[in-house]
Length: 424
Image 1 (cartoon, rainbow, N blue to C red):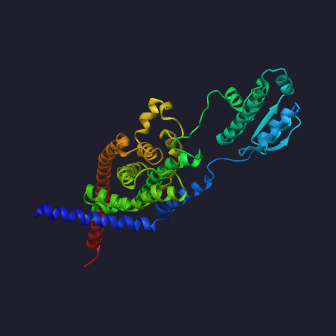
Image 2 (cartoon, rainbow, N blue to C red):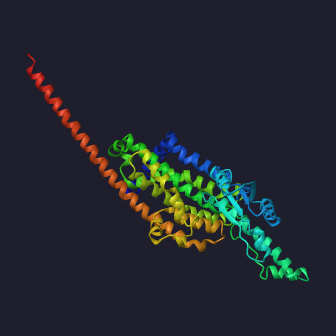
């Protein structure tokens, strides 16, 4: 009976701590913003920004030193493409560079004076392409448009010089080997479809860690745990504290995880190839690992502001370490090892492979088992850290009580002395 009584007390105390933590989440505006507002609003904001998927009509400046029919044809074909818009013609390169430096244009097409002359002599002609490399999407649009136009013009010139008898012969002479380009896992070739699924999973982790860190920072600044742990019987156990807090965070992010992985991709037509029950199996260890990871981080930071500086600073490096925006095979072994410390590494890789690339659940078993391993490791570390904090809190409370007791003894001695000195 005593065992059942202890279990019932543990469950009751965990439920009490859950209620207290949920009340703290609702009352703290900062925690409420990171737990509710940011996961709801940020994915919509990012998805709307990248809703066009690809950039169109990138402004470029043309410096035409050839002034020939072929150079004008090159300019017209570039302007007619969907990705590039000819902003104006510049007199020289200095004027064109001035327009790019003022961000009025994103690139320059320089057609040299010998462009038409070289083609007439059946020699290779060149076109200079200068791009603003601050944004890779505009660079890709400008460069690929120039390559496509030059290939098309080259094919027309080659057909004209070869004097074919039939159209079939002309097509084979220009392109002996036909290439059919099919973009895998991203039919639209868009930036949003390739990057935003990984960003959604990273938002889940970062907001959860930020919210837990803010809540713990508030408790430390108000000295709430130092007061409750030695006095309140509900806080007399590590499993009760961890269980109550975990239940609070899990209830909130079970809903947020379903919203980020199921609702947002459907709203913006991102690729969705995974079955919902496979996503459920994946999100369960991912959310649990993120919660315990956030509880560990919350024990490291002392003030509310510290966790914001730390987590926001590592957000971009964590995105690179997932292997989505930068190839995983090109990441050095040292940074690969560092990436294994974060749940987002395995969670993002498994989610993208299942939902975007069409992998089955058995194909991501390595990431799935790694997440459960992180759950176990983070739970052990969380228990050790919380035990250390409880021991420190109790020692601080005993020290305060000892100081208060000595002060009361001094006050009592002074009172007795004054009572003896008074005349009867």
